[in-house]
Image 1 (cartoon, rainbow, N blue to C red):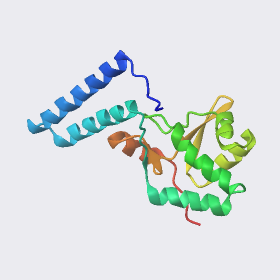
Image 2: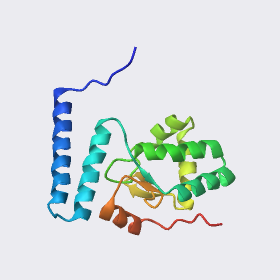
Image 3: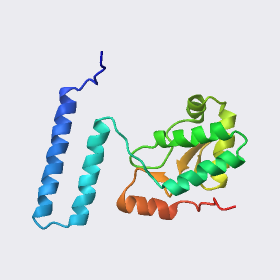
Image 4: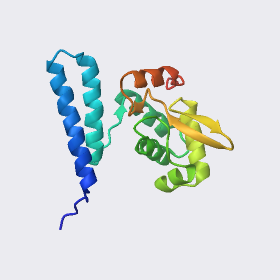
Length: 171
């Protein structure tokens, strides 16, 4: 027996509307509108359609991602848990920023360690610039360095990458 995702009338209406927007944008390309702008708009609509189908995409720089994994494998006090946490961070990114939306306790539960271990691993990742943190009151918000991976595209990605801390993967 297969499991099917329930789709409400509202879901169907939204998907149909997005498909219509995509079709209009694609037809505008034939009318002489700026192709680069239209391509970005179509890509945004396509991402939204993919998200509605259950897919989420993150652009990852594979060589840098592999360097972080290798660094954790060689230098972390908990290499397996550190690599697991690193991979899980990308599941917690919203479509419009690189902020990790899970709490330290939620990350700890996902990986099977205590919250203190999450803080330690995040400190290891922060030391090489793979993540950075911002203090907010008594708490801390974590962000994945957009040079390594992001949902952002175009000018938003360029701006985030320019403002991100420097990666320090070279020993």
